[in-house]
Length: 234
Image (cartoon, rainbow, N blue to C red):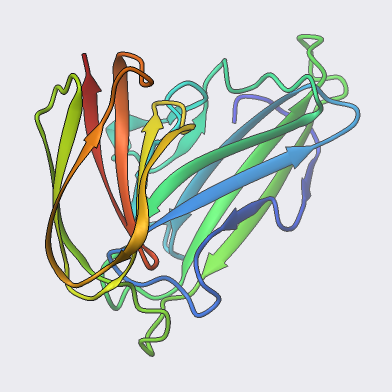
């Protein structure tokens, strides 16, 4: 963090959709950080998933390119932080989200270390405060809440104009969700939500005229697993 001030610890700033039983290796989850203060209208953050030795664990995936970016890309995208646009909070509350792809089997506990800056916009450190918060996620080693395995996901044409086709393979039957998300992480359109059998699937979805031109992310979810692919719409 680039500001100074008194440091205090606050619980539960960082949350996730990881099951209570722990993360399943190779699965993608959503991580969220929420801060609030009646005395501040600008907030900043920095988060990194590490072990006790400071090694980066898993992969951070940016889903909101307007409000978040990597702090030190040269260090392998170990830290995610706010952009300038991601600091404003006129309602006195700010939330940032990103995805995290869990590490390989046998990694063990992962600790998300976070630092958060609360500032009052007067361009000085007066009234500013620094807070830390951590979230520990264990590895699920007993098979409970194991995901429905999505073996692959392909989409074409890409760029697309009127429609896009998704080809994917499910190892097990289950409820499948397919969403179109913009670069800020906002849900634009729910393309599909239904029970599907195991095996190969080939589904086509209409995009126009209700979807504007731009860069999006198509997310396929089943169980606790998700796969994402970038899609350009012309």
